[in-house]
Image (cartoon, rainbow, N blue to C red; front, side):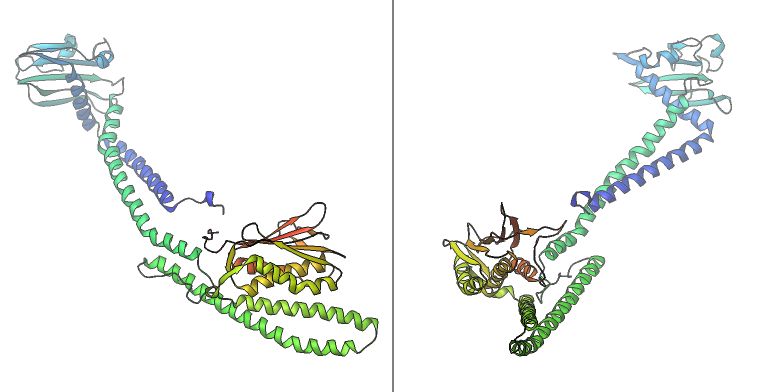
Length: 451
């Protein structure tokens, strides 16, 4: 799965919390509407409180004098004839400050000469739409003012405004604050709980399965994460056991085959026949394969703790001189060029094995009369180039030399040696023909980038 497609666990949990909180809010809103809808008298009481609060916004004071102007927002409701909504504002002594009510609706209100109660409500028609009359005393400064309203039919749907305010004030705002605190606490808890996982992942990225102490520390981890770390540690232990068994098996087979091959070759050399000569050549190929198995076994047993600085120019010059007789005996040529350059932390014998395999591949598969150039640099790079037939890169695979026959584990050995030394093996085609193989390392003293 690509890295950009992965979402952090905190984001996943946060989105789910928000989703379920929204669903809970929706469910509670529906429950509130249903519950309130069963009690129209209670909704009438809430509507009376809401409407009188809105009407009270029109009060103004000038010293001890109180005046009233209907708020513009309510003009379409209490300032229009035949709207079904009427209101009256008066003092406790009966002085009317505002009235939008004819003689017919006055009967729904209390008499002006009556000292009004703090709150009163009378249902005109039960059920929906709301039809009620009521009044409420509101303190303004040092005066008590009495607001009375009557609603007949609720044509402007005051009931829905009441329900919306109830849902907003008593459910959405409190639940939103709770959600913010819960979400914040959850994200902080997740981040804290996952910190050991992040640290374990960083350690696992740099674990060497060949190292006997390669493991993730389980101390201080939550139980579930410690179980995962323990499973990883046991997996590494099994991997080491399998690699050790493979190493022993490979090494044992290689050493057991060497002696019979040498005996068979001696016997074939005594036979003067073309078939015997062809068999001798095939035995040489098999012997070469056995040598590679021995190299592979030695590679798998390598310990990085014993690495020392190795000068690439000296290594290239040395391996070129060592293999020159082999190269010229097969009709090819070899040369070295390079200047003193960076050193590489590594195992000199293994690095020579890598260079030897690249040179032997060029001789064996480059074609008749191939010319080989070994070079060191620029930088921590060792290059083996030839002007042979080149290679054919497979679809989606690393390139392999063209060859007639051959058992071909040499390049795999080179790749493993490069990886062991924190480097890589690169191939390129040389125009018009030929191959360039490069061993690219990190110079001694530099930090190898994480891969």
